[in-house]
Image 1 (cartoon, rainbow, N blue to C red):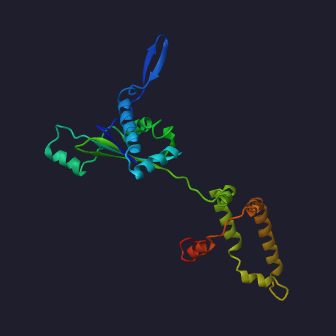
Image 2: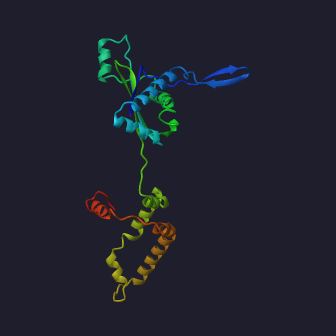
Length: 250
């Protein structure tokens, strides 16, 4: 959902202090003033989305009401100084000169994120992905693109596997497999069979026994938990094909 707040972008100001009787208080000088104006425009845009009659816009607005996390992009377009020469003006409009002066984008983001509270999100901590850009324009405004940040969703059983193995634990598990066993070619097991005359057979048995017991002790409990989880194999062929095509290397 995209909304546009007309007028020069506004940055968040620091709280001020005042005395009420014998007590010192901190207050936000923009509440009820500049912030109220921005909130009013946001609320108007929100109502217009619902009343637009455009099914796509209404669907986006509906999805925002159910979202728990948001991806928000701010584009701040600042006015050009009236005292600028024609050359300076055009340099800014073409992007030859960046808006590399105050206000900084963090304070700009903060004001508009605070204003969106209670309209788009319950708290601006729900904005988990964000970006902002500053430009010059003959039509100063703030453009806000709000999207739902979808959480990664697996089937409940597949997700359960990764609740057992965190990222670092899984990397450790795979590293141990590589370090402990990948140097052993499956055909080397034939050297341990009775008909083999491998001279270091006892040493090989001892080494393998040690590797297997250490590996089992380290991962036995985790693997037992995973063993109880049943994963649907309806797309097993797709996984095999992806591995064969090199899309997923193991």
